[in-house]
Amino acid sequence: MSNKIVVTDFHDPVLTEDQRSFVERAERNPVDLTADSVLEKAVRRTGLGDFGPDDFRGRMQLLLDEVGADANATEFNRATLHRRLVEVLANRLLRQDLLARHPEIHDVRIERPIIVAGLPRSGTTHLLGLIAADSRLRSMPLWEAVQPVAPTDAEPDASGRDPRYVRSERTWENLQRLNPLMAPFHPMDPEHVHEDIELQCPDVASYYWEWMFKVPSWRDHYLATDQTPHYEFARTTLQAMSWQDGVDRRWVLKCPQHVEQLPALMSVYPDALVVFTHRDPMASLQSMVTENAYEGRFREKVVDVDWHVRYWTDRVRSLLEAYVRDSHVVPPDQRLDVDFDRLVHDGDAVLEELYAAAGLELTEHSRAEREAYAASHPRRKHGEIDNDLQRNFGVRTDEIREQLAFYSDAVS
Image (cartoon, rainbow, N blue to C red; front, side):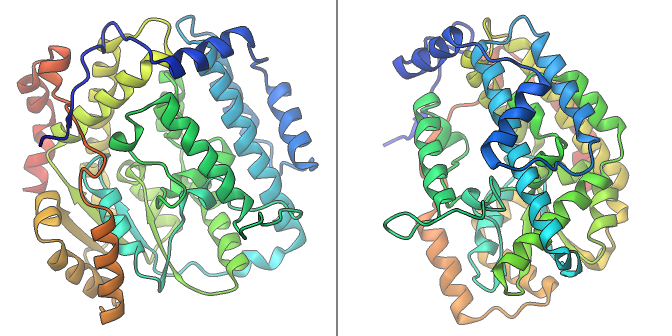
């Protein structure tokens, strides 16, 4: 039986009852989309007031101004920006407080991390999960990534679960109500091994914000600005997380953004092993456009499907151009290139090569952990979205393939 999921209402979306409820509730309760409102709420949530260096305020204002000026943005989308900024700035306050009380955190070493980089939907999540299954290594599940530093008064619930886990579980339930296709698009359950880009969000940085909001001016600022300080900010958070563990384990990280930020990445993690995944960029692009166009039904008053096609085509091209331009900054003995099809069909061989490149012993225990993960996370576990650009959006894919051909030529 086919598990293909076909969406037929991209251009004229029909909202589910839950989606209408979320959107209408936001319309009845518009947020005060101002910096003062965000900052005050973050302070009230944590009881703390020291945000550390205040350069983040200008970047926050860029986001607030751009989303605030978008006449096509729903109140739900405006409320989402307000909520996310409050969450990440509360995390910034907690992080700053911990660092002030424990300056020794800055002495923690982050050595030889294994960093997965590749286009979105190019196998990065699957590969990260296989590596992170090895309990000798340190990765970040979503429940921890979205709040790396717990409040000092946080107590486990009756069953001993971290309150951050409980909150993440509740968020995942609501997210699936809002987007019933979220699991096949990209699972975000509490145990999902998350991207380290989350650690740059409290610095109000990274390309993360492009995925949530239509902010081309923010993109231009991000691409024109040296991102090294934000990678350093994230590394300090890794140091804090390692310090909280009290155990020294080697980190496994992943984010597609790294593809276009290789100079910053290698400046901050000079001894990293960088594992690049390679896939036909059209497969990645089709998935990116499909997900963002679908989510437009609760983010946009009128979904501009053509905008999503143009925007994400341009972003895939710019990501790949940066990779081709800068991949030389990764030393040959610190990189491994993984073909998507080979990862899918001969994953064991890929993992053996990766372990050898990382200088790790592939033990029977680590094999068993990886096999258990693979068995519980089969491909298309939640179904497969039909994301054909030509069929769903009337796009001439041959023209786009021609625009992206330079990448295939470079990696062939």
